[in-house]
Length: 201
Image 1 (cartoon, rainbow, N blue to C red):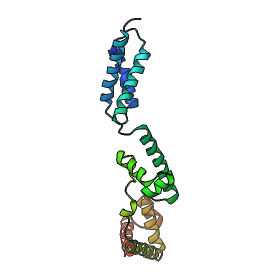
Image 2: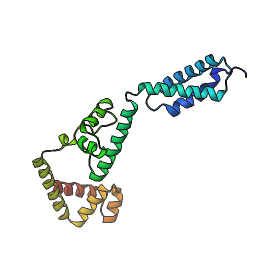
Image 3: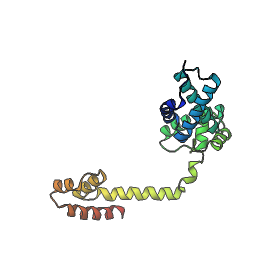
Image 4: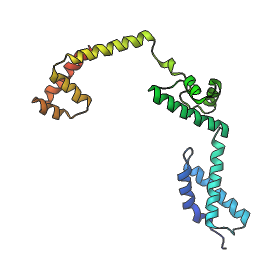
């Protein structure tokens, strides 16, 4: 079998690098892949197929990517378990999940979950308990009262004013709102500003 020119494989190696490289520069993977091709040619003294050399390039890329991953296989498995647990908790609770909730859902200790966060912080961005970011109870209650009062003031508005606010919130073109109400676009802007001032209080 004739010796394969390594440069003839460059387009295939570039394509592999583009397909594989999610966490590193494509050029780095191309270089690693071409080194894998050259090593395979050296070992076999050139008596190999193109498909074998492309497979060697891909293997070299994957080996390189594994060296960039700080997690062991067991740690990577735990990260996946915790991420799925977080998704389940957040779908049920309709809010961000705390680390303790995720650990309980995954059936692991909080210490183990926190350790997984320490080795791979970007994969588990829920590591910090979300309760630290929540307002104090009295602040939350005051905010709820303010929202309720704003709703009451909105309901007391004239129907035309409510229509203008609703259309604005629904991102309906202002010209359409003006045409439907039989007023100018400038008048819609004026009414909307007055209505918002009354609702916000």
